[in-house]
Length: 357
Image (cartoon, rainbow, N blue to C red; front, side, top):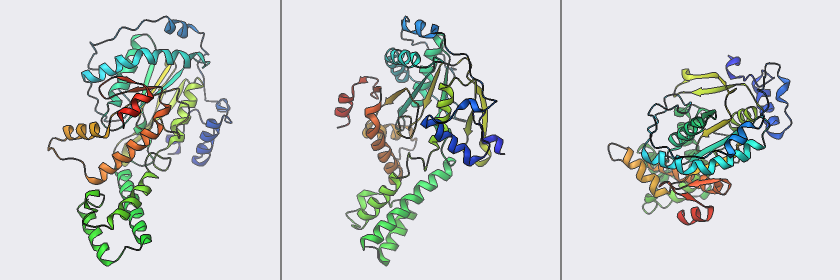
């Protein structure tokens, strides 16, 4: 069983030392060559850079429906005109940035992260960018960061809710407003999945302390290394940029029996594209070019409404999760080298701040 959780790039077979080694790699202390099984491709000759620097990009509209997508099992990717427009808008600027990254890497490799909130088209846009690179003769692979949470989706959703409610009740108790009456009301609201509903604060004033405490606790969990194995993804990036020929990549489905690893051949790949909400996180190391696909909270809400066939909006708790997710994306936006609006327009950081108010 341990074998399933071990990369060819790692020399230590124990799970504890595996994490330590990943951290060493990120700090520049680990030597990937210590593993005898680890093989690098030949270092770049500069030919790729010279070819890319002289390339002229012509926007493509006639995209095949069966282009290769990311590696998340069961992920549904529906490419629409807006995604093609975004990819065509992004690519010329991205190409220049890739040239810079390739020139600094001895194996002529670059890592791109396509990040953004719910429903903004990360999977579709990343797949299209990968396709555009391949159309220019540049090998590219699209990796889904959603394969790397510490828990499968159902358990992670439960952990999020548990974290919110534990911190909420604790905060309310510390405020001195927790009594038998509050306990019964909170229990009822929890059963109705309305305990994160801020509109109820007027009716139940003590909910203000409850929701604020729960939000703070949830924010300390969402998108952090408590929720996500950033070390593993950072180690994959380090191996790729160090010329790894083969890398073991995780596949995470939605149940306990859908966890596996595939050994992926990167010998003909020069670009690794990571599509992930957290692709611009401070916890992730080694990304050369973060690309932020932006959407305002209003645009995100409208998208989620349009995708619900019964017309129902998200639960108050899901709305809170999306709000905190948006705040984290916003706090990291200054690092993005490319920012694109939901309508497909390139934005400067100053323009982005104006759009987000």
